[in-house]
Image 1 (cartoon, rainbow, N blue to C red):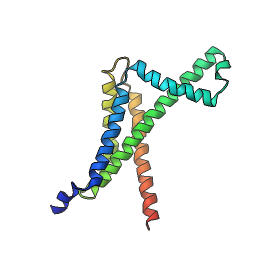
Image 2 (spheres, rainbow, N blue to C red):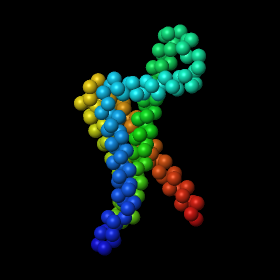
Image 3 (cartoon, helix red, strand yellow):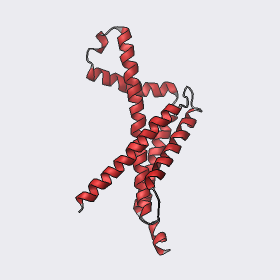
Image 4 (spheres, rainbow, N blue to C red):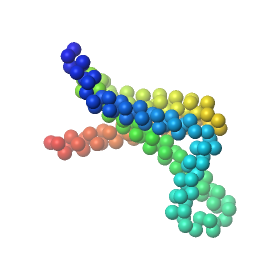
Length: 166
């Protein structure tokens, strides 16, 4: 009993929980953007990418420009989904590791994946309430891939740190 009480005073638990909540807040913030604002945000980034990687982009035929811009926009937006949910997966697994020092948690990787997937579902449902946005099952899948990558990255980091400390 004493060990359990002491665990809640461990700053690792609170800092890792804070990290999870901040990442969830960032995801919520971007999901709360109306479609026009969200498109403007990613569109500006896409324009910068195109200028950097395709300096002659403006000289291409109009239909070719539209196709390239549309393709790059989809790639940028889906990559952003994967990265933000990978950060969430990593943070969830980190938090469960901190909790696991004081509590027996079976299959923490599965808990991290489950919590991340549930958050992805609620994120898509939240978008139903945002002007111009929609909920897509495909995006839940993309987000879940991000969570999986984040958990795997956590496990890789832990393995590398464990080997280094031996």
